Image (cartoon, rainbow, N blue to C red; front, top):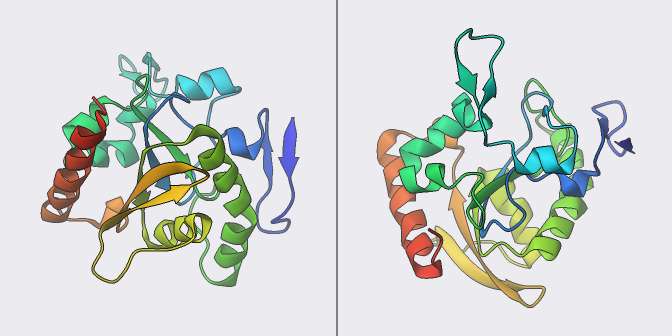
Length: 206
């Protein structure tokens, strides 16, 4: 069992895998979505289970007669409004994976100094993930994620950039900057989707 007590008194990480292993989907994924933090404790009990979070479907005890995967949760269904292609590639080999900036789960995210401390404490874990797996395209979900990833790669977006490309650890990485997916209206979701799909075409993420 792996434990992290960097944010003791606020939250505590205790799972069968280290924080830097928290990546939902295939390690080969060429595109990542990076969210803020998990809402609720992930059910996966090992790295293999993390890789299969998006399928095959499992029985949902809360909805008799229904089978659910992580893709069926409200959070991930919102990405269908951004891009059906992106949504369909969740969990696929060389497709789309998901991780969070803050690895600890909560019922809601903390704001202010507590949040700043949690982000600072977790930043090395996300940096280790980016360095190890080298995703080609990263969708940063929310301003805090955009700023944090910018610190990792050495710069954030300019005022007129919605995406930008940098070299990190010898590999090119393109970062797409988004507001919180939960707060985007349909028009903003589709604008984001068109930008993401253009990069998916460019990089051969199919």
